Image (cartoon, rainbow, N blue to C red; front, side):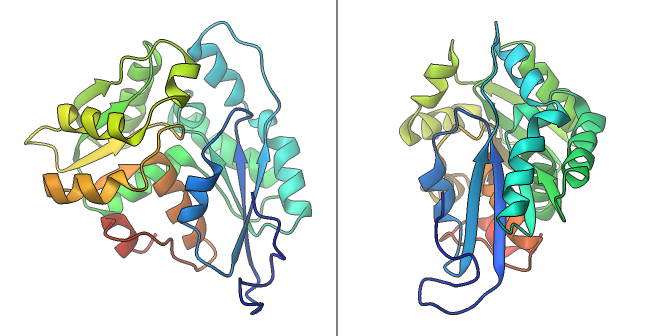
Length: 251
């Protein structure tokens, strides 16, 4: 993702900040992810190995095994990453709260000084904006959607609405654009929800978040946004993004 000298910013000023991202082998939103990264912070992405699967549950279950992150974490640490995030939502909630914790522990065992996951970052982000009752927009099929609800409820939140995008395949998910995200959020909001969560790192949200927040008057948390916010916060940096409520709060 970033081939710059990780110790220098765009003007050649030494910073010493370098973060790493473990992404699934099919991740395609590298450029959007980079928009949250401030100048002066290097971010390197390493990918998991490709896995065979019969359905979405098997895919995210296999990608969620702690050993899957071993090789990319080693690569990122060797390149100087001071903190590492596993960027995948379903992969990091599919085995519940204990599974998310095990993933982070495995990343530390493989050399990460600081380790976090998308699902863990989302929980921190929802707490940061004061959310308790949340409406969720997601692309998952059953039973992955039920596992998401279980994870959020086990983490202390009340899921007041769960709105699916109605997609049949992984390829369909990666074809979603921000217009579709905006429409799904509009359908999925509920008056009793005090925040919205757009789940899945394959959904583009950078430009959509401020539009939704202005329209609905409540915080919107997306998977990629929360991950970068938490990852940068772990090394004393702040994510950048105009009119995104989460980014005004410290991790």
